[in-house]
Image (cartoon, rainbow, N blue to C red; front, side, top):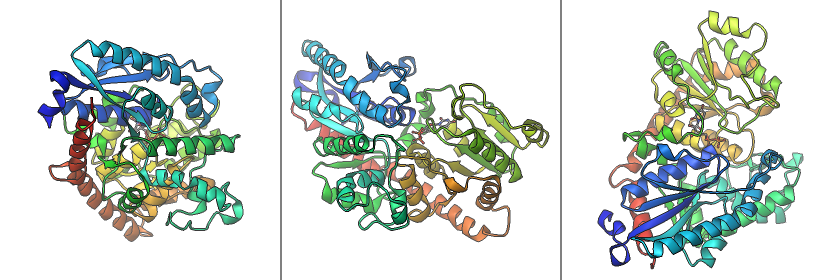
Length: 471
Ligand code: UDP
């Protein structure tokens, strides 16, 4: 395979053009995929927006092509609708960039083989069709949340969507164990715009030449078999993508857009095994000041060591170091109990033996990283597909506890943290079972990417699939 992939028509090497959605949780898996495909002999060009642009100097094996995105400061604050804007504004520059690349490769020693783009960037499907190139779609989120998105038209027809308070607890037929309140939610002022976006994304995926997923067979087995029946395109579950690079010298963390603060690793060294709760709500969640304060006091009240990530923009309206509540810093530092950083090397943190639990917003990358390191989770989904992931973590995989966002208060937090870390007798048996299951799933994740594992085989099928494209 390796030899074949580098030998295209007339000995020219096959070039793959990758286009991520410009956010941390999407760029990282795309770059991880690029690393795998590069190792199979393909040439890689990453086309990217100027907004949230990756750092080419960290990836010398890839070629980078920036395109102007034309985003205004106002558009950057439109939440989920920003994805729609990106689809509109990137279309022309992306088409122009590809046309240029096809022309220049025609006379060079490379030949464009296909486009691999994030599934949210659905406009790339029509550009690919126009340019007569195959397009593969990459799902950076969970497959189960994709299945929920694919069900939106039916849920709208049945009146289950838009969500009504009276139906919140009902389990949705065909999407069990998801309840109505677990469906992806975007707190948008324009729900119709969101439904249209979701529909475009699902249709774009159905029209693609293949669907690459950052998941593995044992993690989302039921959804995989359902979607394999429902979707016209072939599915390649090749995750957890992060595991491929964590074992090699090319550290997976180098794709992070933010600078990671490694001082926390020395702090972790001083903590007892499995005593620390690591807390991060990803790269985009914004909390109210009150929620941030309850979070901090709850952690302190748990009397367990904690490592808390608070970005400069974690709290609404702020863009600087987070304001600590009065008296908090003294207590935190005097007790030597907590550390707050702006951005952690999350994968290394989760792999550290001192970490006994992960309080997470259930973003899919964070979920996969926790699964891959065998760390049980405390789930606080905020929006979008996080609620689907939380339900799967707590009720399908059963490797986490749910902490309701509505009940985000210090007493609840302290209690849940102590339960997860098995400090109190109450609930310790349940937490112990979570930990055992998390350990077992970690093994399965690692097995999936080893020789003959399900993801390993899926990567091979993907390579064969790309090689089968007519040049
Ligand atoms: N992350 C990190 N340091 C932090 C917090 C998060 O490197 O302090 C990384 C994390 O490892 C993950 C990504 O940021 O790969 C967050 O992606 P996820 O899908 O979990 O959430 P999103 O940011 O998309 O909401």
